[in-house]
Amino acid sequence: MNTKIVRVDPLHPEASLLEEAAKILAAGGLVIIPTETVYGIAANMLNKKTVERLYKIKQRPEDKPFSLHIDRKEKIEDFARDIPVSAYRLIEKFWPGPLTLLLKSKDKGKVGLRLPDNEIARRVIGFSGVPVVCPSANLSGKPAPVNFSQAIQDLNGLVDFAIDAGETRLKQESSIVDLTLEPPQVLRVGAIKKEDLEKVLKTKVVLFICTGNSCRSVMAQYLLEKKLKEKGRSDVQVLSAGICPISGTGASGEVQEILSREGVDASTHRAQKVTKRMLLDADLILVMEKLHEAAVLEIAPEVKNRLFLLKEFAKIADSDLNIPDPIGGTDELYTHTFLVIKEAIERIVEII
Image (cartoon, rainbow, N blue to C red; front, top):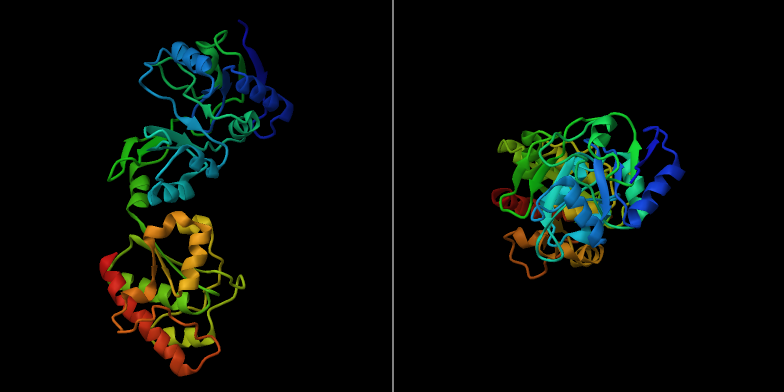
């Protein structure tokens, strides 16, 4: 068999060549593609004969599964289940990029997933329309290829199509983190340092949500940040957002005045709308009213177990767990709202 080899400009890849590679891939062919780490052999995961052929060519034991490469972050939910918060944080920090995540698969086993930071790889995967496994383009036991010459050396005539895009950018394999374990384990240190991975894994994210992100959630965010700083904590990231804010709006004047009396400057705050990505990234989500709770669950029902009304953490004896919006209200209302939030924060800082 002759391998068709095409040279592609890594900065301006010709779409027709990528589409040709994708068609061959979808039909069951094996295609060498570049990534930012090393060259890989792409194969259609759904084609049993193709996967068997890939194992044979790679001389790899069949009990050692191949990882999947995807073209968009959202595809992770097509292949994995019970995705932990730490996975979304790692994705936000390092994808697209040289990080493979081991997660619980839909069939109750494990699945490795990576979103490569390489336009050629992502477009070929996307054009193919099939799930793509993509181990490194080398025989088992040999070094992973960081340029096309190394990739084709032992595989010419064994694969159907090969894309030559010169040298890879990072020239080392992806790092691997197993998130099916508790605590998560770094299984392989590659292009991302172990300490950088562990820093993200150890960080907690607290998200406060109100309506406009100019009042209640701002008080909560800045108060918690102050308390954490006083305790010397740098392992917690505190965010706030609104269900329907006017994007870019600052904190209200009343809120800035109240916080200034606590020694906190909120003049740089800008309102932002809550997104599904924020919710998935957060370890603890605290809302001001039940209507916010309902809105959050509509966006991301999977966060139910880490979603709470902020007032649940206050000691005030009150059966109403809503913290009403003080916008347009009296100074006394603002002060009361602030004291309720402050009391809740005092307890939260002790438990996170």
